[in-house]
Image 1 (cartoon, rainbow, N blue to C red):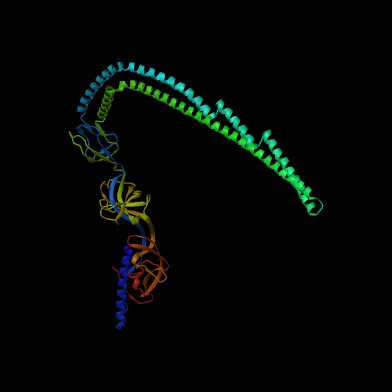
Image 2 (cartoon, rainbow, N blue to C red):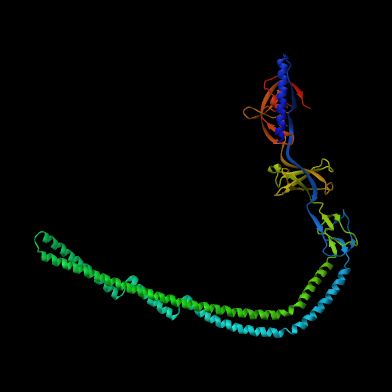
Length: 517
C-alpha cells in the first residue's frame, strides 16, 4: 500500500514537470527538458521480511520450594553457572523435625484406640453374616420359582397352554386350508349342485328354443323351468351349508385363540410375581451384605480416619524433610535469585536458563504471514554484536493473533526464531533484529520500485536516456527488497541512466539528465 501511494505522488510530480516543460516550449524556448535520472544497479539482491524482538533462552526453568522453611544457606548468585542436580540453597529443617516427632506420638495413640474399638465389632459382624446366609437361601428359592415361571412364559411349556395351542392349530388348519371330512363333503355338494344347475340350464335353453319354434309344448317348457328352479335352490342350499360350516370353524378358532391369550396372561402374571419375589429376596440379601460391610468397616471409624489423616500429614512432613535442598533441574546460568538467608521461600526463588540454546521472541505482522512460515531461514543481528550475523530458523508461529490494546488493525502473531550457533556475544534480554530470507539472487539488475512504469498494454517498463534520447525498455519484475525490485529484459546494462519518474517519460524525446542524489 505504501508503494502505491508513493507512486501516485511521483505521477503528480511528473505531470507538473511535463507542464513546466510545455510552458517553456510554448514561450518559444528550445532548451531540452531536464529529467531526473539514477543508475541501473547490478549485484546481489535479498528479499526478506524484517522484524525485531528480544533474545531469550529456549530452556528456562523455575525453581520453587514446597517446604515452608527458612533458608539456612543460599549458595549461588545471578550469573553463576550450575549443573543439573547442583544445590542452590539449603533450608533449615528444625521446625519440621519437631512436627515429625509429635505426629509419630499421635499415630501410636490412634493405633491403641483402634485396638480397643475392634474388640466389640466381631459380634456385630457374626450376626450380620448369619442374616446374610438366611437371605441367600431366600434368593435361591425365589430364583427356582422365577426360572420355572420364566420358562413357561417364554417357551410355552405349560400343559394347559400346549393343549390350547394344539386345538387352535387344528381349527386354524381346517379353516384356512379347508381340511377335514365335513368341509370336503360340503365342497363336493356345491360341485354336484353346480353341475346339476348347469345341466338344467342347458335343458331350459333347449326347451325355450323348441317352444319358440313350435316344436315343443308349453308344458314341456314349464317342466324344464321347474327343474332349473329346483337346481338353483339346491345350489343355494349347498352354498349356505358350506358357509355355515366355515363360520363354525372360525368360531372354534377364535375361541381357542381367546383361551391362549387368557393362559398367556395368567403365565405373564405368574412370571411378574416371581420376578418381584426374586427382586425382593435380592434386596434383602443386599441389605444383609451391607450390614456385614458396615459391621466390618466399624474398625475404620473415627480413630482409623484420624490415623489415616495423621499418616498423610507425617508423609508430607517426611517429603518436605527430603526436599530441604533446592537443586537445579538443568545445567545453565542463574539469572534470578529471590531468596536470602532466614527468608521463607515464596513463589519462584531461582531462574535457571540455558545460555547455549537461545532464541528470539518476536511478532510478525498479519500481512507478513503470507511470506513467512516455520522452517524458513533467518538472520539475527544485535547492536552489541555489530555487523555479525547469526543464522537461525523460524521454529514457531502462534496459531492465534495478539492485538495491541486499543487497536483493531495492528494484528501481530507471536513467533520464535531459534539461533543455530549462539556465542558469548549474545545475552538474554538483548534487542535483536531478524531478517527472514525469502529469496536471494546474485548478479541481477535492480532499481527502486518507483522507477518502473506501466505501458498502455499493461507491460512493465523502465525509461532510460540513450545518447540524450528517452528510450523505453520492457522488463519483467522479480524479487523485491525493502528498497529495490529485480528487473530482467533485453538491453539492460549496469550503469544505464534510468528516469526516476516514469510517468513523465516520452519515448523518443531529447532530454538532459539530472543525476538523482
